Length: 177
Image 1 (cartoon, rainbow, N blue to C red):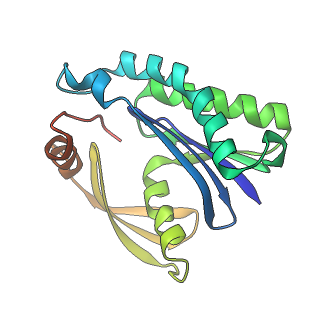
Image 2 (cartoon, rainbow, N blue to C red):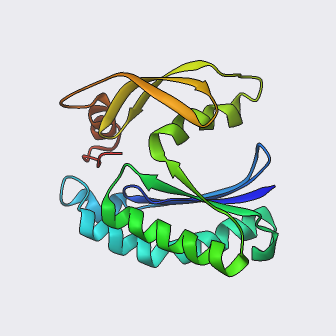
């Protein structure tokens, strides 16, 4: 099965083609320069930038994977958490592709996606797993008893370590996600 994955929860447009558990392509367009002068992500600017980068990113991901659009068996897309406007761009694009191809559309929780991505790098890893998620506005410990199900065991209630990490790593604040 070949899946086109679309991620637009914050300020990067990410599109990948995954076949079974092999990443065939991974395209990420950064908005870091766009937001740098503001000292953090501006949600409206992020959404507008996704509108201009989503189609070229999809085309590039397909080209890098050396496949045509008709080879796609399903489309996966981030449905949250994240910036509402940014998420809407990705979901709209994913719906359009899935509808045009008459293939399934799979909504993915951004945080669950972080946990599941470990299985791409470590195919011998098997649930149950405990994961530390440090991503933008989210810092939590989660348990995944089986694929497709995760439980939050604990999380920060104020500043997240992910924001501090993002800020120190890029010298600009990042958005929740």
